[in-house]
Image (cartoon, rainbow, N blue to C red; front, side, top):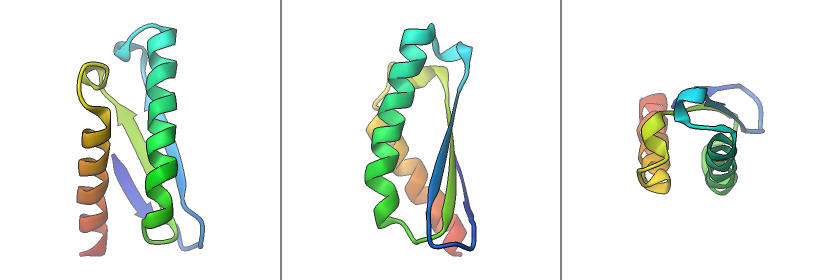
Length: 81
């Protein structure tokens, strides 16, 4: 995950889910889950950030919510410092 300040009031999210994650059905399910997590998390983040999430093959088997929250918290912490 990468986070960058964009200098505006709105936050945006982009997702990269390669074929290494799985077949089309699996990739789309991962993208839907990530969109849901980002929609819940972005309103509480500082305004004006761009978030890019790259899903790894392990995202299918692991706890996606916990991984997303941890990565976002770490990236926002680095951005603030």
